[in-house]
Structures are given as C-alpha cells and as structure tokens.
Length: 95
Image (cartoon, rainbow, N blue to C red; front, side, top):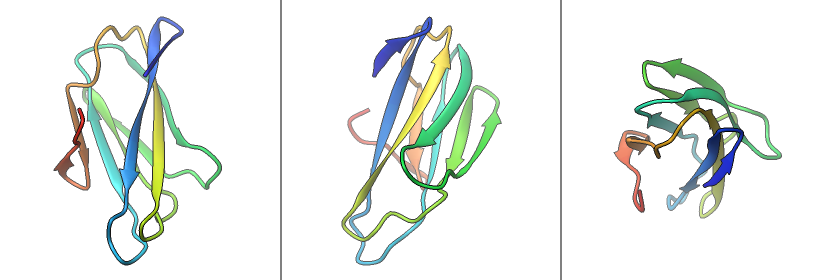
C-alpha cells in the first residue's frame, strides 16, 4: 500500500491456480474513509459496487490459468487498512 491524498492506494493480487481461465470477485470492507475507485491496469474494467463500509469488484476479464491480476483501489480519509477481504468468498491470505 501507498499513502496518497489523505488516504491510501492498496492492492489485492488475484492468482489463478486453476487449469482454466476464470473470472473473480473481490470484496473489501473498511472501518472508515471514503471509497474513490478501483481498477485493474491495462484490461477492460469490471463492475464496482459500493456497499456499506466497503466495495465489491467483479472482474471485467478472466485471469488466465496459472496467471494473475492486481486489483488496485483508492480510499480517501482512511487511516486504517481494510478490515476484511475475500476473493470469490474465500478470505484473502497475507492480509
């Protein structure tokens, strides 16, 4: 993560260990701050839904088998890291 604009930019690395390409959905929950945006560099963007104290991002393209994608997000006035993170309903590791 990186401090930015009174908040921070963070990221979630999505790794596809499956033998086929697949889409994904990330859910992040926060205790404060204001969600600004989320994106994946260099690909068609997915769908972002802001809900309660966080957001859900559904992929715009599949991650190739054995490949990865990095979801970046920007929060303003956020002094804490995310309180919860899931990818396809499974808790993020290294969190």
